[in-house]
Every structure is written in C-alpha cells, then in structure tokens.
Amino acid sequence: MIITQRSVAYLCLLICLASFGPITMSIYGPVMPSVGADLRATPEGVKYTLTTYMIGFAVGQLFYGPMSDRYGRRPTLIFGLLFFAVATFGCCTSSSISGLIGLRFVQGLGAASGVVLSRALIRDAYTFNEMPRIMSLVALVLNVAPAIAPSIGGFLGEAYGWRATFWFVGSFGLLILFVVSVGLGETNRFKGEKTGFGALLRGSGEMLGDRRFLGYVLTLGFAFALNFVMLAGAPFIIQDKLGFTPREFGLLSLITIAGFAGGTFLNNRLVGKVMPVTILRAGGWFHVAAVVVMAALALSRVETWWAITGPYVILSFGSGLIGPAASAGAVGLYPRLAGTASSWLGLTQMGMGALGTIVVALLSTVEMTYLAMPLVVSLAPFAVPTVVSSRLLRHGPPAANLPS
Image (cartoon, rainbow, N blue to C red; front, side, top):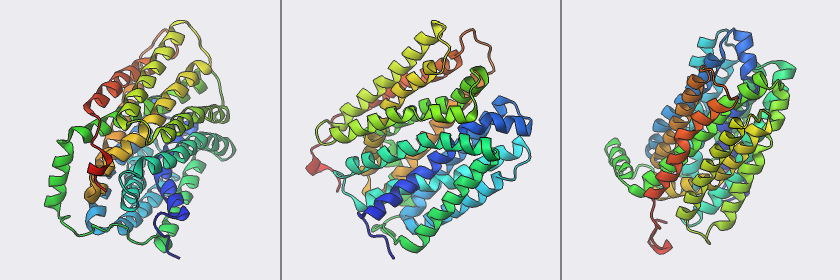
C-alpha cells in the first residue's frame, strides 16, 4: 500500500524519519560513562564518540540532499537507511574506543539521510505557507522522542549493557527502511529538472549568498550547538560528580520535555499571528537567559541536579521556538532544491553541534572551582551568536510573493 502525501501515515513517516538520528544521539547519553568503563577509555575519549557521530551526520548532509534533488527522494532514502543499519549493528561489536569512534562517524553518515529527507518530503507535499505549521507539529513530537530516549537508554544500559542501545536504534532503522521500501512512492516532482551538478552548485551558491537563508541556518546552528554542549557535558556532571545512575539520569532528562514541548507548542500557536523573524529573535534570548542562570547558580555554589536541568529547560524552550520556524524558512525558500537547502541546514546544525561537543570535551579536562562552570564556559560562545545571527533576517514579503 502506497502512503499518500498529506495523509496521517505520511506525517507519521516524516516524524520517524526526522527522529531516528536525534534519538540515536540522545539514547546514548546515559550509557557514555559505562562505555568508558567497559572499553577502558577516558571521559574525553567517550565524548569524541558523540563528536564523530555528529561530524558524520554533518558530512552526510552534503550528500543526501543534492542526490535526492537529482535522483529522487525514495532511492536516496533507502540507501541512507541501509547504510545506517549496517553501521549501527557494527557499533554493537566494538571492542575498543578507537573502533567505536570510527564506527560512530559511519553511523552518522547514514543517520543524516532521515533528517535531510524528512524536510525535503515536507517541502514536496506542502506549500510554503503550510510548512511552518507542519514543521511545528513534527517538531512537537520530535522533541519529545529524543527527550524520552535517555530514559530508554538508561534502562537498557542498566539491564543489558551499553550495546543494547545500538541494537535498539538499529532495529528502529530497519523498521523505517521496510516501511519506506514498501510504502513510499517518489515525491520529488522536480526530479531531473535542471538538477545536474552544475545547477546544484549554482543553487548552493545562491543560497549561501542569501541573507535570509543564512539567518535561518546560522540561528538554528548556534541553537543546536548549545543543546549538544548539554548532551555531551551533563551526563558526566550529573552521574560522575553528583552520583546519579544512568537510569536516574535518563529520568531527569524527561524534564527537558517541558522546555522543548512548551517552546514548540507556543511556536505552533504563534504561526500566522506573529512573524517568524520575531519568533526566532525571541528564542535566542532564552538561550542567553539559560546561560546566565546556570552561571549564577554555579557561582553561588548550588551543586545539585536542578542547577543543571533547570537552565536546560529554559534553553530547550528557546530551541523549541527556533527549530520549526528556522527549518521551514530555510527549506521553504527553495522548493526546486529543497533537498540541497535541507542539506546546508543540516550541515550547519550538526557541524555546530560537533564543535560544541569538542569545546565541552576540552574544557572538561580543565580543573575549575565551580562544578558547572565547564558547561557555562562552553555554552557562552554559542548563546550570544544565536541572538546576533537572527538579526540577519528581515520581515519577509507578503505570503503572495513567497514560493508555493
């Protein structure tokens, strides 16, 4: 049975495609200390397994979008999902930290297919004016899934060991591969229309010279960096310094659902009433506020779990506001090259995220008097640029002048 565009099944598939990459990242957080103990690796070495995943995720963005514009969404997606499944099951057999670091890079290359092509599939089926609401709806569910994933990872890690998290996401990837193979038809109505490599390069040049496109992409990229600083740094503080178990850390991570879901829900309510530019600019200030609150608590010697998770909720709320508006704006500007636009958006997201994990990994090796200060110092360089990059955006043209 073919899944028809704009149906409930189509929307569910979009959510699954968009979520399996982020789930793969967040389910891994609670078991990172266990990986280090099992493979005799330092905390910094374990953090680099997250970094290489995101580098692979970022590099993969450059491939899937342009290829889907030229050859179609369906064959490109099938290739990416199969690649992801093979690499993920390879991670289950890793016996050294260096091997896991390499396999995580390959896994990230495959995982990039889902998030890139989910945005392209949205652009294929919905108009520019419909996209912000659809993106917001997808993001509302999408933000819940990665927030629940750490609790799943914590339970799996304690019950069956850290490798169980890879068996779980690998099986999820195979399930999506089956659904796409038997149920998804080709959605790219512009397939083969002026999509040679020269046209793709010219299209990329036009995007990177477009102030509006850069405003959307950079704002979302800096917001992602902040979230991945937290993803890489928080487990070691809450578990190693404060003594929480992986299961307890996973349950604490559920609190961040309130932030993501609240920001995304508010975004959904504001679509059509408030300009996307205004939403993006407001979201950046929540990131700045989160860093200020965390710094104040750290300097006041408040060394407890809520001094970390509380500011993270504020940060997540801002990201929930920014994500749907920035994604819809960037991809919606270029309907004929939606895959390529999605690639550049994803490359910036994951590239910034990888940079964030490198920064927090390096700063974690520096002895600091205040418990949460490595997180604060790592977050600060990304918080302010989130606000500044949104200034590249101006209030857009009337809806009638936007691409359909």
